[in-house]
Length: 211
Image (cartoon, rainbow, N blue to C red; front, side, top):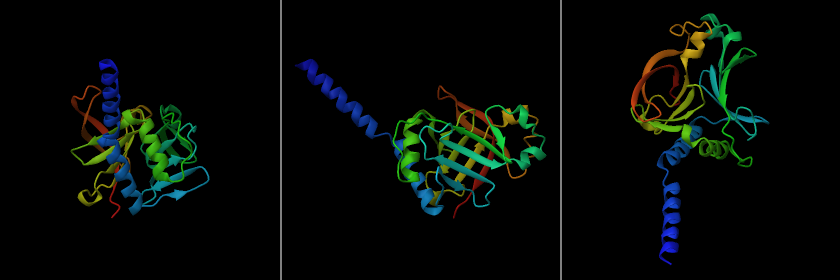
């Protein structure tokens, strides 16, 4: 009997921990707030959150089996002008003048009715790739190879409401002068490694204030 009670208490504790995933809850709530300010455009296959100047966009696939469920798409022209040899790209591709990077989170969820719902499905499926950057007040979803999409936890307290983030290393290996890409800022940012140790890494940033 004592063993059975202990097992029940353990299950209750684990259930409580799942419901108290504060980072995931904050990520969902803050992304919904972003879409309230900057609504997505809907197509037959995806939702698209475009930057105010239309030079970059976040694509959220309606198909949970898509090769890239969440992806960043940006104008390839500045990268080509900075020396990009598209044939040498690894982890990204240039199609129809657009540079694309993305990830599949092997979500088993059924197709949802709203962008918020299905993005929430992808956040849960890719939970290990979801984080909070306290220094900037940003939630973030990693898209593999050091690329990610970030959004403000609080739009009222932040002037960088959404940020497209690219890893400069594979671009540099493909011939890009990463310090001179029009519309992108090469910066050193504070983050953490897999063990939670603070480190500094170079990133290409394209931030936007939506308000």
